[in-house]
Length: 350
Ligand code: NAD
Ligand code: ISE
Image (cartoon, rainbow, N blue to C red; front, side, top):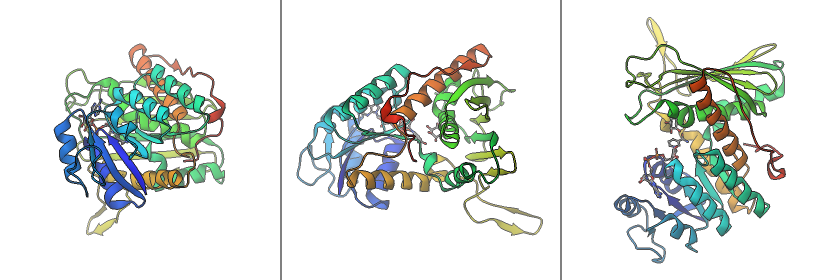
């Protein structure tokens, strides 16, 4: 049984706590921490053994700081689900403590911070960190990658992708369309074709009337892979009708695409239809489950994580930064990465 400590118990933190405690096997939430201490206490109180103070036997400990949680000997592994700019300090502290750490995206919010994490992990000589790019665990994306890698429909030429959110909170900015939303599509492109992104161009279509003033919604990103494969990504924030994730890879002898729906398709007089997911929690629920079960299984076996690595987190953040530069310049901007350390020479398997 892996005792997991969770730092940041907001929306996704609570969703992951639910899956760790109620859906998956082999884990127990042993401790929580949040700058909002009332929220941390209330989340702990809702868990089996909850309500107890820090260090209290088999209860769920509530720590004042993330650092105290990481240092708690009762915590075997750390889950970081706090705001992006706070990730670096917690991931570095977990590496320093020699504890496996699962960090939600982004690994860190600047490329310099990601690079410091890469250096710290490389210095230990082994992987301790996994980054939360859950699309790699989605059954449809996995099937798509298998077809592309299998070569049965020839070499890939293009990928079309759409990432449509029904709506976003008022604090959402144009930059966040790239580094909070499209970062997933950037990771998918790198993983799908097992190669880096060479350049990014960003186009601004006509603005959606539902978008807040000044918000460039939607955006169209054009990613050129090092092999020349082109990936276009429509990133929309106010699709209204639901959370719609689309992907199609065009190869020399055929195409492969994500299915319309994972659920049942209903036909009735005059038409047919299926459910559109309400949000990312619904669309990727099974992917998150698989992501965490595989992470727990590797840790339990004493192995290094096989999922998205610090290198993947670093490359995604650098590519997002390049996208921000392209948004401002209107030109194609080159992605410039540091040398890939030997620890990450083999691509993550998930
Ligand atoms: P949220 O605002 O709902 O929750 C964040 C929580 O972290 C809050 O409770 C906040 O009080 C707490 N917090 C902030 N700073 C902290 C600190 N220094 N120490 C401890 N706690 C702190 O945000 P969210 O939507 O749950 O997002 C959290 C993270 O998860 C973000 O990095 C976000 O990008 C990521 N995320 C990933 C996905 C995905 O699809 N993989 C989806 C949503 C969010
Ligand atoms: C959110 O933070 C996520 O990571 C979701 O997967 C993404 O679809 C959404 O656009 C982001 O805001």
